[in-house]
Image (cartoon, rainbow, N blue to C red; front, side, top):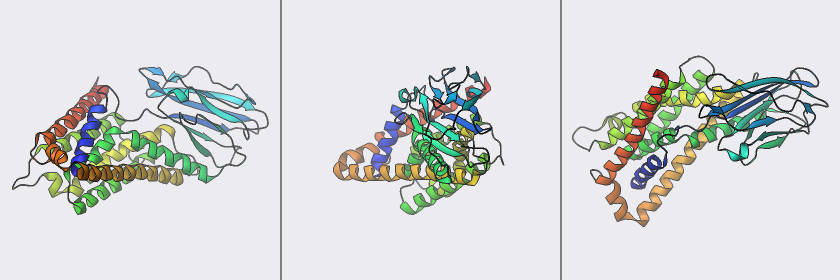
Length: 339
């Protein structure tokens, strides 16, 4: 089973384009705040692609004027625009869509309230579902669903986070230490995610991203060390290694949440839902990886052994491929905030 996991790590490192960001594209964010019975303040934030705004646009219901906002302005991370819209008879029953979203691989979180003082509602739009009809009533269930799906999407599109988890599974082969390490990683990134999202700690994103990449390079180097009289650090203290790097990965998760913001009055709910989404996505990935590993080992035992048995060329190839990709990310991210 472990042998296929190493092979999966190799494939992930080979399939990830060297020039691509390891994270998913930043999500778009559309906030619709009620100012009066028929007046709303619109905040539209869309990701940048190669220095230009992504070719997507927020379109309000037909009863709203104007339906689209002015040209966006770059704020250092994304392109932002604001405008005031008048919507006769309100938003319920109207369709909000993101024009061009079906041609992308990103998503947009829409947060809106039907009237002043009401609890905001959150909806996640994707390429498969780029529009939705505003319901008559808003509630906490929509907020939880929107932030939960955002958490799942963020972890499953984050190749660097997935590679780190996968390398942990490959390195720590006994199930008890592995369970301890994964649990430690989960607790750590949950704590730092909450602390960063609530503003208790403020750490610039670029250094965090560089250290996240460095954590993968560290595990790749650990994999190169053959078993001997002295166990590897990840084998001696698996929970400590996972906890330390988990704190940093949690700060990386918080970046996506901070980009879209937390709804006033429902911060604990949104934070909990997002974190549960991250955990759910991580569990799905781990279960799938373990299942594929077990199936491959049963079907092709000799091939699996030749690829990733300790000391073999296959295992060293996995280490070098993952380590090279991680080292590239480290250099790329350091250069991004140094220059």
